[in-house]
Length: 364
Length: 145
Image (cartoon, rainbow over all chains, first blue to last red):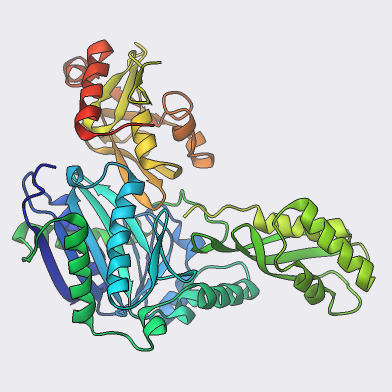
């Protein structure tokens, strides 16, 4: 590939303001001129904030009042994906490369990019593995997130090395349909996300992590990586983008991406559905793992005797394939064994509520 | 259909090859714009598209829409100068139309060009256009299979 023999510029920016932690890689991407070096940028925000994906509706995805209470700014990025809580415990690893020097397909770019994170984690003693398309897992738990965008002549791929993650705040800032749902998101994040601190017992030294990452990048890309500095035009563009990305107009732009649920990682999502039965409304919050019910909870204004029917029924459904006949069999077996009184609520209604929740797709 | 390295590249369209954008001129004074089969293949399943609003006046190269697939976001550049006269509202409900039918139901915007006669020559067209697209895909090592 043309220019592949030119060293990659390494920009270790340390910590910067939340807004700048987003605008700076956009600026380097849009400022890339013909012949400019590829860049790997390392940066962390000096304060926590929330970032939303390019096409997300901020009011649908994020609880703006909670963010205001917590003093968290909300910043839309030009990268895809979902809302995420970001803070100084994450080391952002941003690639800004001439498009012709990365693989042509999105999937192949993610494969290359994720592999460098995987190799860095492994060098630190963490058994990370790549899970296509853009996840990195450690024993079934996701560590970090990734995203990408085209910015004029640059292809940009971003992600992070996770020292630690504040699951509680992440669960608080998301807009969710109910507190039960929020509890389930929190619980599922705890079960299916991990960090370097969790894997190693303590967070490793930043420089050690950075050295492992740069070595992994150099090996995977087959190129030298040399420290550099931002150009004046890149800084000037970042300042202009600070204005745009900090504006209400930009925050409230977008909105085409509908996420009926919260994706925890490639194989796990939390979703909610409801059905109006003759005997009342049944709400169902479900955790779906690889097309199987990992957890389920029912609530609503229906009547059931004994009182623990919702919990008992939910318990029998854990592990069931998300498939109508299989769900019917489990519910029927429960009714046969417990013989509950659920006036106006049939076996079919429970299955409908589950399918309402599980049939929703969470694209990113 | 013209098959080029597994990609469908019809001869009756204009192309901005490097940007993987197509243009259909139906002689009405307006053109239709979309992304090619190559683009939808490179991006994979599209989950969201945001178009600029009707009435927006753009220069060639400015973005008429952004496309998101699998956490990747990319622009759809205006192939010529002009004003957006219509957007494909069906894409809001089903953005995968650009995957399943990139040259038909997956069209993205219609534009009233301000200097079509001058700018159309900057686009690849007809059999030579398909040949230049094929050469580009060959040079970049891109295929749809």
